[in-house]
Amino acid sequence: MLELYEGLRQRISGGERAGISYEIDQFGLDPEYLERAGGLLDFLYDRWWRVRAVGVSDIPEDEPVLFVANRSGVLPYDGLMIAHAVAREHPTHRRPRFLIADWLATLPFWQPLLTRIGGVRACQENAERLLASGEWVVAFPEGQKGALKRYHDRYRLQRFGRGGFVSLAVRRRAVVVPVAVVGGEEVHPVLYLPPLAPHLLGVPLTITPTFPLLGPLGLIPLPSQWRIRFGEPIRFDDVASERADDPLYVNRTRERVRNTIQDLLDSEVRKRRSVWTD
Image 1 (cartoon, rainbow, N blue to C red):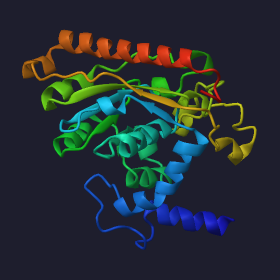
Image 2: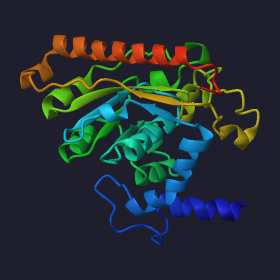
Image 3: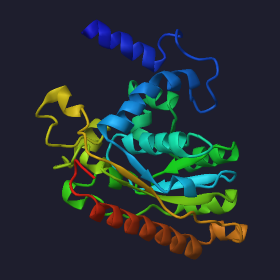
C-alpha cells in the first residue's frame, strides 16, 4: 500500500515526467490529464452528488466571464463542479479556471493535481492574467471564512473581501455571474474548528462527523445532492474605468453581488426536500 501511495504521489506531483502532457498552459492546466480525469469528474457530477445546474444557458458566450460563488468547504469540490457544469452544459463547452486557496497551493500532493485540472492560486494578479488571456474564472470572495463555516452557519454568506472582483470586472470589462452552490456544505460538515490548528499546522484542520473519527475514510466526501444556480449576468460595459478604484462604488457593488448570491442560496435551499434528495 505504501508503494502504491508513493507511486501515485510521484506521478501527480510531477516527480516523473511520464504521463505529463507537453501542452500544459502557462497556469499548469494539462489537457491530457484532464481528459483522463473526466470519468471521475463525470462520476462525481452524475452519480455521487447528482448535480443539477440551473441557468447555464444565461451565461454569455463571447464575453469575459467572472463567476462569483459561495465557498462550500475546505477542499475545492465547488470550483471543480462549477467548472464541470459549464464545460458540460454550456453551448461553448468552455471550462472555467477556478481559484484555490494559498494553503492548498503549498501542499505537495494536492497542488499539482489541482493545477493540472484547472485550479489556479487565488490572487488578484492571477485572476487578471487569466481574464486577459481569454479564460473564464471562478472566484470565491468569502475566502477561508466561508470554507470554515460551521454546520449551523451553512449557506449564510460570510463577509466578502475588499471587493477585488468588482475592480477586476470593471477593468477587464468582464461579466460577473453570481453562482449559488447548494449541497457542497454538507460534503464535510464542520462541527468544530480547533482554534489554533491553522496556525500550528498551516492548514485548516476541521472536525466533521467522519473525520478524524474514521481516519483516512473520513476524508471521503458525503454524497449530498447538489444544485448549482447561475444567476443573471451583471455587466459593466457602461461603467467608467475609474470606478475600479472608487471605494464607494466597489463596496456597493460588492454588497449587491453578495446579496444576490444570498437570495439565490435561500431560494435553492427552500426548494430541496433534504440534504440527500432534491
